[in-house]
Image 1 (spheres, one colour):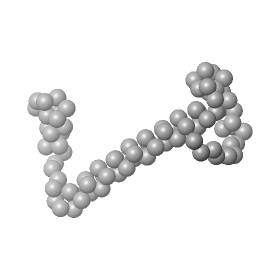
Image 2: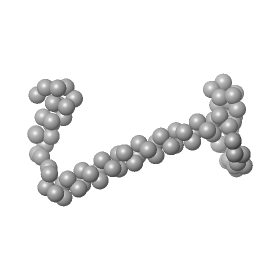
Image 3: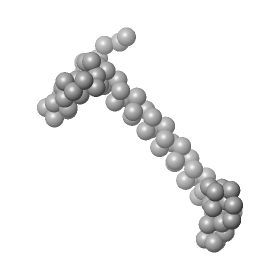
Image 4: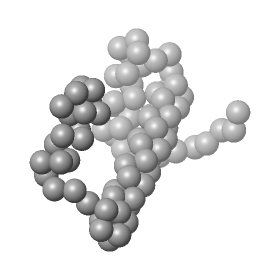
Length: 83
């Protein structure tokens, strides 16, 4: 595994130490790897949401919209399988 040297603020270092001392992680590397995995997951989720918003805007520009009542019916149908 590659090794990196990083600089943490006192606050960040204290947090990492608390995570290790609390038993959630065995060492600082585990804390930082988990943090990076979570950041990566958050970034992927953000890109998924962003893509949905952009698709919605494109649909609106094409005139593919419905009124609020119809949108409500569609949501209920999709979530609950009934009107």
